[in-house]
Length: 211
Image (tube, rainbow, N blue to C red; front, top):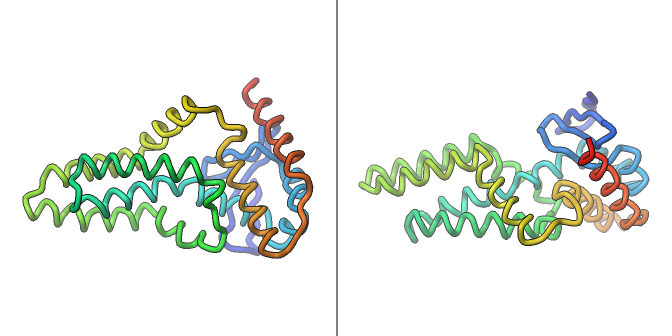
């Protein structure tokens, strides 16, 4: 496992024939060499660990968005519609993530994703709902929070997304590619062929499916 402490936040990852496996549990179907071939100066300036960390934050962001869309709308439209709105927000955000990603606000997304922060907000809002006699809203909110934490919402959205259309690249890889491109644009850095990078991702992705 690699753990470089010259930059924060650092993550641990191990490179395997089927890609990069991070300590967060997220796979990237690429290699450090492929990232350096594609990213060039971006990799030298930002670092592989930081880029992977940013991609992980954004890959987890649909849960954070869905959590706060639900909790923000609960008292206005009721628990049933709040769940529906949360699902729509999760699916929409997940679908357009490669376009949405913005490295400059990764820190804000990290806070939004934080389970402790979400827990504090949910406890406050659901306790208020229960104290006002809205026990159904409080119960649905608790179930929604647990479903998000257990990954059931993400799994459902992924299943629906795959039914609608098979992705050309795994989502974490698409996010990582977009983050590298955003950093390159911000620094006026020319990248290597995006098509070649994507083809290498697909090659490793297919190799993993055959294991």
